[in-house]
Length: 120
Image 1 (cartoon, rainbow, N blue to C red):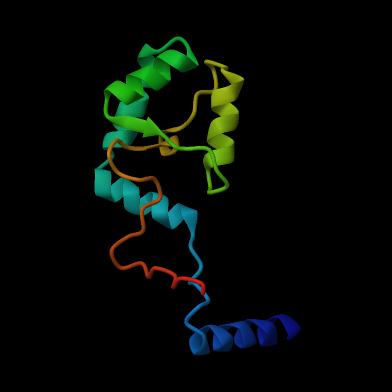
Image 2: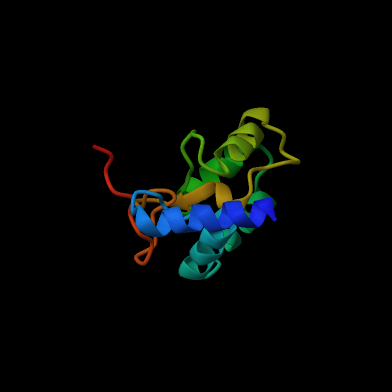
């Protein structure tokens, strides 16, 4: 009961104050990117994983295919991706979602996703 009341209070506060950003679900963003790129990134990652014997070769292959490794940071899944990259284990290469299209920023908001207002 207390949890329900808390959720209602947070929802009501969110409706009154436009400064509270909507929650974001990384898996939904990933699904949106997958549909946007039509599986191109996943196909490139599979091809590069199959033909690469080292992590460095895999990263170079993905870059040649037009995909850039995500920058270090606190955004999901950067820690996981960089952990795999730094480990350098060719049996555990970073997944396709660790790359973004060259020339486009990683985690770019969708057109219908609201931009949080600037904090004064």
